Image (cartoon, rainbow, N blue to C red):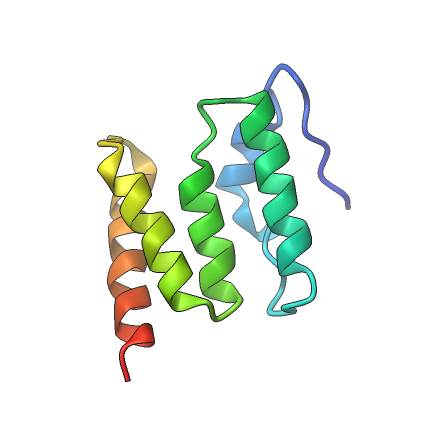
Length: 100
């Protein structure tokens, strides 16, 4: 299955809700491709939570400091919704993982 990003944004919500379709499956080689896909979606749909999605991918790549920065940026936007608590929890986990 290869996700398709539609200009009208109809598939984009589905993809963020089913983030396993975007994740690199613990393969760091796929992370940059997934990050590019996130940027493509964000360019089409400005409401797409790109900083949150980037944070998830970076966390799964083991880039915890970069992930924390993205989760922090998402939370700074003042978003209220289903991803706020997840972002806060991932931020905490990223900071813990980044600390020796």
